[in-house]
Every structure is written in structure tokens, then in C-alpha cells.
Length: 272
Image (cartoon, rainbow, N blue to C red):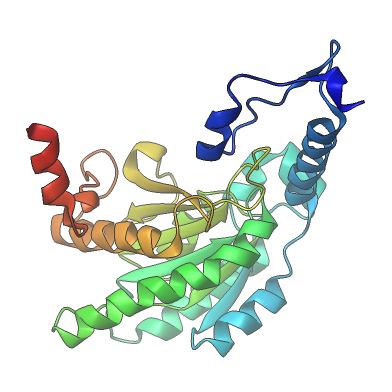
């Protein structure tokens, strides 16, 4: 029966990519194994979109790792509204707005607001938020602690875990908490090989009405994509230079790869 499957001459390239190439052919269709694998990936992507975030469990994990947390929710009352009304996911519910405003006032009391607030949002993949956010935050914290030891300390606000969140929800959260920077860690739209990919959106002077040209984005954070250490390196670079320049977005370029070990040697080889 296996002789009915025609092999693809590109099969050797499969070792270099997760893309669906060189699947073979059985008559006019796919062989059974890759067809079943496609159906499984499609189901995982759908589950990632519809699965609710267990915000309380994530907050317990974060607090167990030493992070202070706050909870928040967008104006979308449930997942159906969130998916059908993107605008509701970009603004806080009345209850969350009042609670964060109180937290912002209590946190100030004559002091400056935090330099950075991290927000973890479910976005279009609660799987990503639940799986990738804590390891990334731990990797970033190591770098911020090193800055503090070198006299370049950061005032870090509580991690806000937000349900039914779109990227722009971080702007209102950062504004209410008086943050100079907000980093939104949010589940990205699932692909057929990446149902748990996390994106990071960094915005200077967050406030309601910020647009995408005012942000920097780090995408595909997951062990199979951009690993935690690599993402933390990029995020720390962007945080450092955003604070130095007082901006994010199109005016802030990500040149972090130039600081990686061996980067200059690679440039020298390429120039030969």
C-alpha cells in the first residue's frame, strides 16, 4: 500500500523547516499521515483562539516566582464578544478601570510611577500567555536586576494579567498606573504550526489613543521560534534605548543582534 504514495523530491528540505512541504502524494490527494497532522494542527489553532485564560492560575504562578500581580479585564464580557468586537478588547471594563486607577493612585503617593509595567494578555492564544509569559519575564528580570546592580535600576510595577485583551489594552493600563513604558505580552494569532506563539508590544508613554507606529514588536516567542533568552535580550535592548531616547516605535530601531556574541565576527566573514 505504501507504494501508492509518491515521494516528494524536496523531502530533504524538511529538516530545515516546520513548513508543510514535501508531504508526498497519494493519487490526487495527500497521504493519510500528513492529512491527519494538518487536521490536528487546525484543531489546536481553533482551541487556542477559543480557550479561556485561567487568569487566577497564571497569577498564582507569577506570584510564586516573586512577581507582584494585578488582575484586569477588557470591556468584552466573554470570548464571543471578544472575537466579534475587537474594539471591546482595546478598552478596560468599568470595574477594572476603577480598580487600576485606585492602584495607580496608591502606588504613587508622592513617588514617581513605575518605569515599566508588564501586561500579560490572552489575546488570540491563551495557550501562549499561560505557557510563555512566565519564562520570558524571568529571563527579562535577570537583566533588569543586573542593571540595578550596575546603578541603572528600574522601577517595575506589578504584572497585570488581563483577560479578553487586545494589544491596545496595555495603553490604558499603563496610563492608569502612571508607567513610562508598557510591555504587552500577548498571545498571537495561531498558525498551523504555532498555536502557542507569544508577541511582545512595547510602548513609551502609554495612553489611550496610541497607534501601532508608536510601538515596537517582538514576535514568535516560544522555544520552537524565538527562545526566551533571545526574546529577553531584544526586549531589554529596546527597554534600555526607549528609556534613553524617550520613545518607541518607528524611531527606535532594534539593533540588538549586533550585541550578540560572535556578531562582529559574522559581519567580518560576510564582508570577505
